[in-house]
Image 1 (spheres, helix red, strand yellow):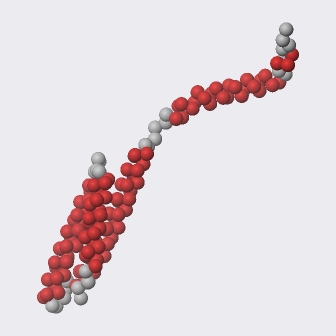
Image 2: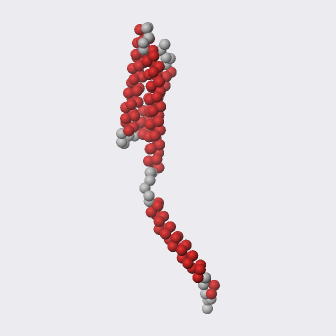
Image 3: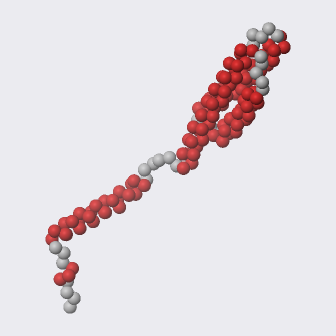
Amino acid sequence: MVSVAGLVRPPHLCGMIRSVLIALLLAVAAAPAVAQVAGPTPGQIVAKQQADQNRFQAQLQANQLDQLQRQNRAALPQADPNLQAQAAIRQQQIQQEIDQNNALRQQMNAAGTDASDVRARLQQNGAQIQRLQQQPPIQ
């Protein structure tokens, strides 16, 4: 015969063990509900980061173009007709880039915009802006 004397638990421990077991069961039952809470997927997080980066880049380019435009406007009232013509041509180039930047910013605000396509266009615009910045100012 096997003695069960060693398996008898003191009464004060039975209540504590029962409470711990109930808490564990509740935790296990609640775990799937917590795991199923909807949140952004890794792909959504990356897409949002790319869109935020694109917006920042577009704003930076808009600021660069504003600065180029201010510098060029100072050259427009030149007395020399050749310098005026150069400043007018440069103004058209700057305005074309401003228009492209505005169109791209509007496209970014539209639903379903491909962030990688926007990024590629931002890189193209950035290269053109850099070429404009490297041209010596008309004086």
